[in-house]
Length: 169
Length: 159
Image 1 (tube, rainbow over the protein chains, first blue to last red):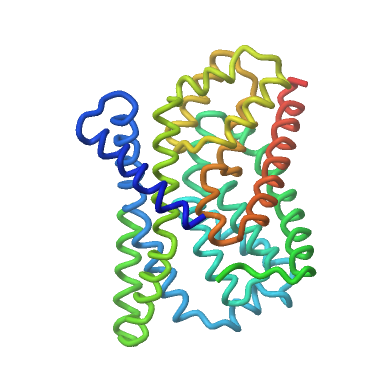
Image 2: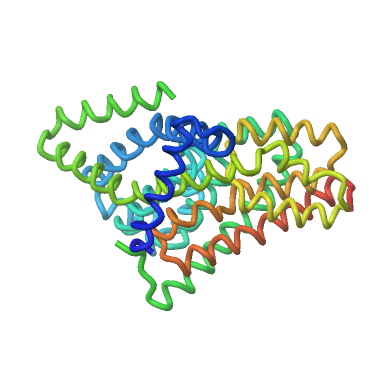
């Protein structure tokens, strides 16, 4: 796939350049969107990655293992959900955080719960949803998706750990 | 958003005061991790930008109205899976559709898959989980979203 990038990236760049040079219509619209999303990410990602770096050097492996690792009790799924609720920026931040947690010894069930929950219950997004679609709507979504997420995460985690799966470096 | 920057600056300062060498190592790790994922990030941002240019959100959500409930739910789930849209665009549009009489279960299928299933974020997720697990995880999320939509339909008396 990374070999494909040598072909695809010039294509992407070409379209963006076309839009920048006043291509109008589709290319210009793409450039506008690209700019909007990149600036949005530029506001969050530097902080997120600096905090991940600090986490890596300061938090001890034993601490993560004890609370989120294989020996941890059922409370570890609650921690995963709470951590996800306060994660900013969605899956693009959640994935690198999950990767660091995994390297520090968190089990796969917790990792999948965390990544999934970051899509379900990030606080600002939830408040927004409830204000447009109602608290009942959000309540149903939470009470169905969270238990199912935790259940499937545990099963998927056990299945993969049984097969000797490891997250890529 | 300012709080995030203030918090990060504080954490960095405290860390540097406690141990400068270690803090430097942390920043190196930050940079390395960021550069590792940067190409996939750019690719994803580009794909999302192009997709939104080809199919504007308003048109997309037009697909959701005027169908039967179950068919509408199915279409909504697929549309939500292949789209990425910031919440500040998606939820107000859902609010408008709700006023136009689109059922809750259709909106639920759309907004839940929008958040939980990411076809366009595949290039990023694959780098962390590998292709197989990425597909499996998103498939499970899709099924969970369908369950959410169906139960939303039951709770709101639409089924």
